[in-house]
Amino acid sequence: MSIKASRVDRAALRVNQGSIILLLVLAFALRLEWLVALVSVVMIVGTVVPSAGAFKLLYKHLLRPLGIIHPEIVEEDNLQHLFAQGLGGVFLAASYYVLAVEKSIWVGWGLAFLVIVLALVNLTVNFCVGCYLYLRLRRLSFFTRSAFRRVVDN
Image (cartoon, rainbow, N blue to C red; front, side, top):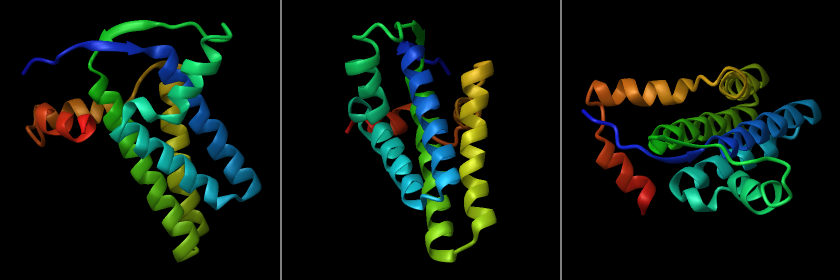
């Protein structure tokens, strides 16, 4: 099973991770449950329509042109990053549901903090747990690369 490499800008990934962490910590500190939902939507939209990802657009149209952050292009499979982002978005959707509907503060914020911790691990030590899970599931033939590609290419 070969992995098709594509061009990935790691600087854009770091902006994505940093934005997620910042907004979720802010949501927790100010008890803004709606912000958890917003981050979830941004992540899911950015997974399904990668060119419409709000954090990617922030990087592409503001941070990079101003020279605040410089591109770091590498050859690797972008689908693993999209899978990880989508999975994080689903966890945040569950977090918002539990916070808003079930009124379970511990479980709801626990799910949000799981996303924060995993984004922080990726940002600081460059290990993406969602990417690792994607590669493991592919190896187990849980899904095929082409099936996942069809979802994010539509």
